[in-house]
Length: 487
Image (cartoon, rainbow, N blue to C red):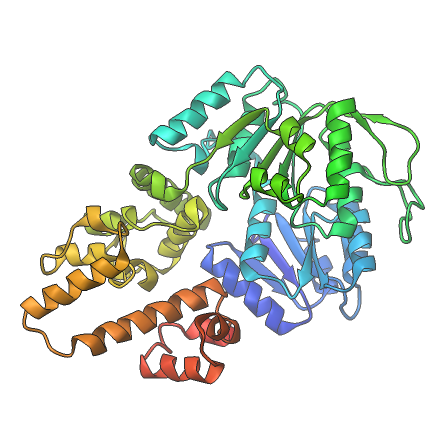
């Protein structure tokens, strides 16, 4: 029997609250427990799909809880939270079979992405078989995406190494999964590892495994991701962040086809296809001595570039409909649809967070929009604000249409706006535009820092008190109440 898909376990009420808010925004069901003992009792009657748990708690601690879950429910991924400095706990968590280690203080978006990844890897059997395999990154008619589809088809009978490049959120892991699913290795494991998310001290053990006694706290032997992916595909995300010494070890595996566990002396054969991904310019990192040139050439056999959303705006309507259907299905509600005006607005938004940001928007709409048909006014403020999104004015007083949105020089756009208002006989233009300019800067700053006011103020060039005063003067408290609470 399944209950809410995510269980949160932490004796700190503030941590539970932050995670609950983040999951609610993402349309993900959750249940919270103040202790591991409460969660263990609940496991007799129900089981979640993912657990995120603190380590240090009164009663049963997180590591004992982890060992119980892995013994009785080995299929449930457990994400362990602990203090940055507590490396021994992190090692113990990985040894105990933790899905991932999340250091505190953590970024809320990072935590949500980690939970979503764990959920994706534990699909319900019915979900995995119902044909919903067409993944969001693999929907679309844009020419650049068609190139990606053709490449996946051409590579279906090959085990050649592939390097996927593209901005964060473009769907690199989805493409790696598709490459695996359409390959001769499809019946074997697909193992994904974000090399930037693993603490440097643990990455070698995570990749190659370790022998008992290899380092302090290594109480048992452990298989690494290479062994887990035997016969299948190993996806190494954010490869550009891999430390140089580990790059050397990875090159050796790709060259020789075998590796050693940490502390081991017996070579282990690696029958694994490696797919790597990065949002960084690897050529530039090679020039700067941050990435090995020989490893770069080993990885760069076939390169697939994923386009950002701003280069595939024609795909936004089909992706939006797909995400709205999926969000509605996950929540057990009727899917919402965007009015023509709302869809036009969304289609011309630049989506700096790419497919992931569009997916998050659709989850927000499913949870927050009041009616079945979503109008312009129902969209989040940052999507519909005229200062950020001039397409709104196309439906107003004769301003430039959608083709002009986000193109060219923003100062020219400002000059055109001033000229239009002057022709219309408006007064107080500077006050109004300054207000909109400042509100846009504040909103963007808070969005960038996850609502942290001190950091946003620093980045914007103000003191915290100035930022707080501006928020009050502009009447932004209600609109940004949630961010303010995080400040």
